[in-house]
Amino acid sequence: MSKKKYSDSELVALYIKGNDTVIEQLLNRHRDKIFGFIYTKVHDRELTEDLFQDTLFKVVRTLKKGKYIEEGKFLSWVIRIAHNIIIDYYRKKNKMKNVYASEDFSLFDILHDHALDAEKQLIRKQMIEKMKRLIEQLPEDQKQVLKMRIYEELSFIEIAEKTQVSINTALGRMRYALINLRKIIEKNNIQFVE
Image (cartoon, rainbow, N blue to C red; front, side, top):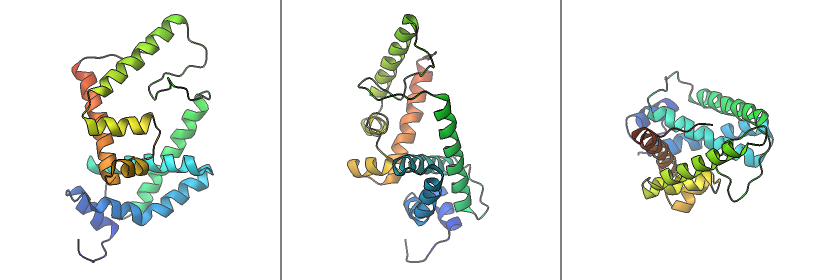
């Protein structure tokens, strides 16, 4: 890309047309403002980093799906996404009891307010095992990113550094991992019930 300074709108248009390299430039341009906005709402650096990564993931996914409507206000749009992610986080936090990480902890654990009876515990354990087996069917690069995000709870920046790829590639691999996981579930007509 030449030294010309592109506007947000131009960078978005280039990205939607398939120029994957511009997304990092676009997100880096506004990183401090987005990060600062989230931090003023949650006052926790680690949580801010997680919510920031979730915001970037949603921004990239929405752009890839072609659902972004150009109004010349890219930053405002991203801040709205961040705001909604913060609200969702607090809603979930208020609904769930505190769960302490253990060896068996998984993103796919089902949380309940009261102790599960023996039958439900068995069903939950089977569901977790089934999900782990499904993850193993993913292509290696997608499986790697998914496991780092879920089990190691790494941010997308950390995943990108650890796997020596761009953040855009890490986000893309996560997106395809989730798409492929959904396809595997649908193809095998697998039901997950609480």
